[in-house]
Amino acid sequence: MESILGKLQYDQPGGLSETELIGIIVGVALVFVIIAIVIIILLVCLKRTRSKKRREYERLMKQLAALESSVRDQCRQGLVHEML
Image (cartoon, rainbow, N blue to C red; front, top):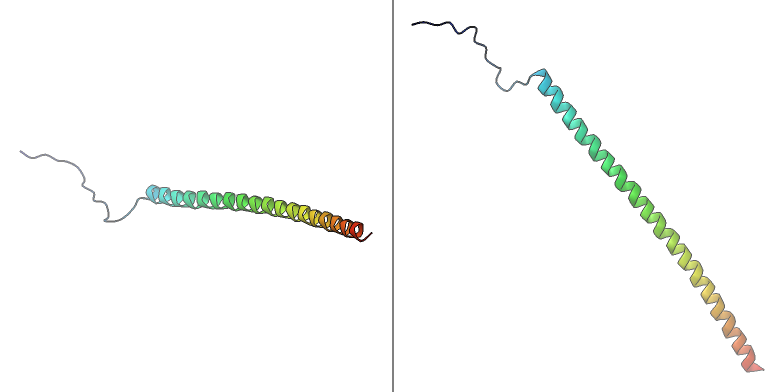
């Protein structure tokens, strides 16, 4: 009993087809793009946080300067009042 199966073809060992290779390249590129987007978002958030903290610091420094000036004026007035 003999039967004909047809032409036998072997894949090359370790070889990838063109579509598999394109799929891998697109996947890797997508991962890099996603990572870049996440890094950009994190940098923007960090910059906003720093700017907000800097503005808050400047506001507090102005309040402190105003308070020091007020205390200085009150001390002068008290001293002048005591001298008279």
